[in-house]
Image (cartoon, rainbow, N blue to C red; front, side):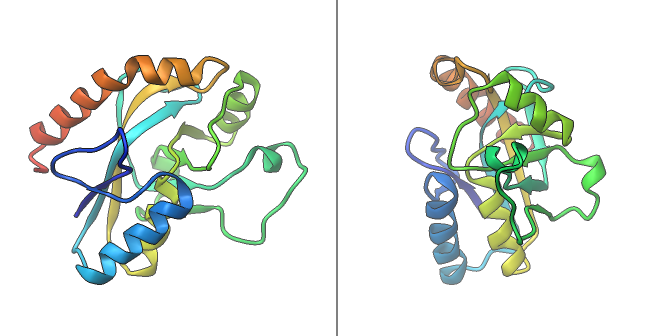
Length: 176
């Protein structure tokens, strides 16, 4: 089963699951319960904290849920905030998920210091749902912007081309 966020990020071959951590978890759980897949693939866009280039396509099986307050040592969490379907976190690109978009180069550098390269709002939820139902999972992302002050404007400008590149990549790999 191939899933995507939806709204402006839809593909003819993917089921939209909603934007952000909550919508995606609820809707993906509903999909999995109604039609359990053998494998899950999430496709979408991502912001780069600085190491990945615009329009680069990245595959990952590791996500984190780290908020800025955690980086600033003003909060902590008792839950596991990094999940993996690969078993080898050290060899994977870590994709951070939050309901907030990073718009600070200084914060981006903090994520990079934790070996986290990308930001996508849904991927952590997708991995958690897949983990709960013992479904193998992966994500395929195209970088639309850098996570800095002009992130939203850069995302909007690059989004159409990024969607075309990701669609072509999925088809070329024979996933659909």
